[in-house]
Image 1 (cartoon, rainbow, N blue to C red):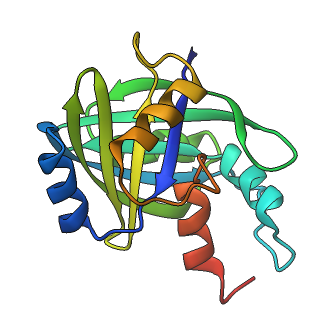
Image 2: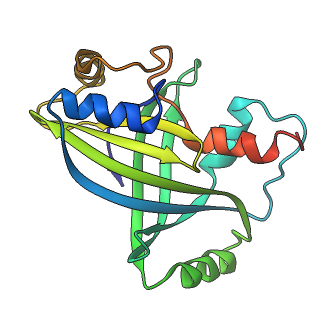
Length: 194
């Protein structure tokens, strides 16, 4: 499993305002793609009416993803995350295996007992870069706007990533550097049921 550090923050601006601010600050667009994730849950997992964030994260941690990138590359993916008492991610990693197509992936995991799709995430990702700092602008399910910063050689700690993002001078929620997209989408889907 490959372990990695990253931060993810909720952006206060709308997508167009954010992109205009980044361009004005000298950032250049270096990539643009779509990610489609199906969170498949094991048959014994029960979603009930007593779910708090910790319980939801525990359910999500047991999911296997069927991931497609631009409908051209497809993977079975497992994401591993550890959390502290405040819900901050302390360790994370992922393991993936390329597959021919997403429907075959769904069939494989169903055979292993992951028989239900819990949530689906559609993530439009545009990456902007300046001086080694890459900002992944993520527009999730046509509703939420995030910036994700992954560690690299120059920004190799959580604090360096936070400081670099702060220096960009854009508005974002500074109370949580570990936003959980899947948790938010889960709550959107099941809030009337739990």
